[in-house]
Length: 472
Image (cartoon, rainbow, N blue to C red; front, side, top):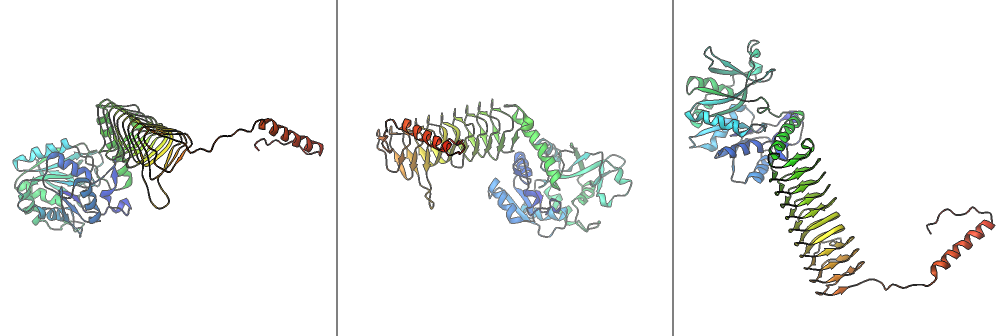
């Protein structure tokens, strides 16, 4: 059960706090992923503020059937939220793990320890010891060291405020106990809310309470943008450390890898690389300095030279890209394709072994295998009203400075001469030339030089300064 109904006023944002991102994923996605990794089923999210938008984001990431939503329109405390979250669990008799939508750093191993400890039917809670406990609920133990209750900071006495063992707010307990315990809660506190912490003395008197200690870093909640940035730094360090178990990051402190990125063995990543979204890098690939990849699949053995940018692209094996290539959404490159410096592609499929090595734009284009596209080539895919397609078939050769005015097709093994503007289909094996015939004016250079010399002489005779502009 994930509690994510609050507005998060300290974020000072129009967006729900749990939708703010850490390492490319919304805060609320982290407890959902942790619960799924533990095998939790079903998963209930208690939502309130911007419930429709949070539900939409969760459905988009995890599927419409993966999560049950309970609505908490009136914010009456965590105890009230859990009571509402139990409603979609009618008939469920197992253990319930209670998490929060703004606590992204909990490790799966920590939660697994809690679940294991709760197997005998006790309430298990996560605790930590902190040097400065202000703001946290304090753990109050009896003379035997057993947990008796939790006292919230605002309700604590001066003596209780000196306790350094604090409540992380994460619990595991049998569903039956939670139903009974939350039904008995009353708002006897400074806030007039139903505190979930008040189930602890009930458990102490019935099923028993156990604690699992955690590093305070893991239990950190996000309440403002400064804490968001701090959590992101921790998460990115973890992600990079995990990546370096298989891959080489030349300057890991400069590399930004989102949480959903997959990096296979023997990948090499140079400084200042950013890998976003659901990007996947195949084994043995090389990602050069300054590359930015978003939701892009890179095949094994591919080399991305510096400052290549790709968004929603698919790149095959052993390709060579960049430097300064730009693969826009819908780009699909087969194996052994070369896309060189200052080449831009959009909604373009390029077949095996084809090359566009420099200074080209290919939009809404299908390129076959073993095609060579010369420098300065563009597909004129947009007429101001609609996009149209260009097809270049296997083995064709497109000379430099060619304009292919869509819709148009170049047949297999055809040749388009440099400087051509192609508006009609080029048959298979044909040569297409659209240049104006070249002519020569014999002796023109000498006559031109003499004419300008005469002008300079005349100007000098009239006392005018000599010209310094020789660009006419």
